[in-house]
Image 1 (cartoon, rainbow, N blue to C red):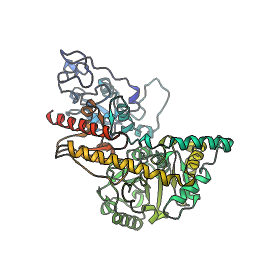
Image 2 (cartoon, protein in one colour):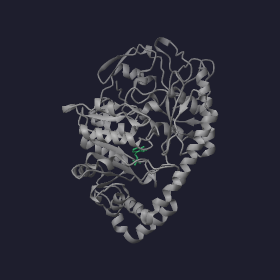
Image 3 (tube, helix red, strand yellow):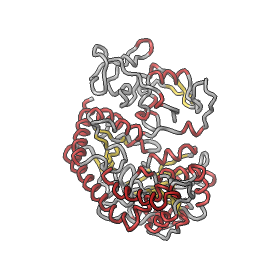
Image 4 (tube, rainbow, N blue to C red):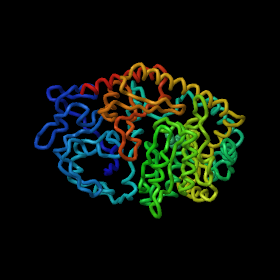
Length: 514
Ligand SMILES: Cc1ncc(COP(=O)(O)O)c(C=O)c1O
């Protein structure tokens, strides 16, 4: 079931008026009792304890007493609410995406079914079907909370700002404006700045013609362009389990049938891939795959699995879309060669400058087989004509003389020390039944709560204690594992990591008591 929330952020949360006998509460102060803001109908009070009944101060899991709201429709499907959970918990994207929904939203759904064009009847606008498929990014919503003062954030995939080469960019800015200002500030070619395309091609470990390189506005735009040229409504698209949420966001508006392929610590399960690829009109258009230091799990596909995957994909005639923003951020040994290097004609490769230089420049690239390139280029022209020429020149200037070869090792060293700090803190503070992996690079670690616990429900407790993370369920196309959590170790420093892990352990201990 997909519920449509066209603009939840536009809705203002109603402040809770208080706990019976205790006056108004804020997140963290209500210990138990009845919420008067969210009464059931016929004056029945919500009797569920805190964090189980509604969104508090923008953080929390909705557990409204929905038996009071017997029925509404989602995009035409009558949905019985005679269950113990708020219907929002059925959202593919977890309920904390809807920070600001209120009891009024539930009433609105009951009386006015959610439809793709769920706008006030006074507007003349009709929404496209694909707009109803768009959802706010869970992570961006959590980041709004995590950015509040005092919160230690393991939530964002934000590179450490300590790694941004500010002095080099300052010098490059002067250089670009000094020698090339007119061109840098003018419209430019959609393919990208030629010297930058050449540098990208030269850095890749297989034979790439710069004519195959398309500079994009972040690799996120690469995902959007790929979706536009390869996905029709109902096309099957295969993804890993779990996978990058931003890719699901880019693919979903094209109305695909997204199918998850089983994956383990070594990567995609090749036998399961073969069983899910389909045939004829329902044959999958591509497999989207992140072999290196995957977002969200931090796992890396082994050499054996890469070889098996590329061979099976070639045998099945299944194209691969390989996303590799983290590949340079290895800690001890480089990961095995990219999938695309093994079958360039059967793969589209996406890369990014966000994790090795600075995400604020919004630059990435796509390397495509020559036959695919013109369509990607046309999609790019429609999207934004070209990526900022000024930024492309700045990056080119910074990269002159092998800068990345000196700079990237410093990022690796920093992130490795922070991963080690997180591993040590987890070992020290976590109960024995919490598990986690030890990634060989990248920015994320994947942890799992004990049987019976739920990361979404843990999040508001953790935020109360001053730490945020992303519940892992957000990264599954379907059947998310509610016990999983993505923990980023790159944004906070070592001390904050230690405090944050201690706070997380305290939240887990508290959730066990509830
Ligand atoms: C797997 C993956 N792909 C793509 C992106 C988008 O990166 P950007 O658009 O900054 O290049 C991200 C960002 O975190 C990511 O984790």
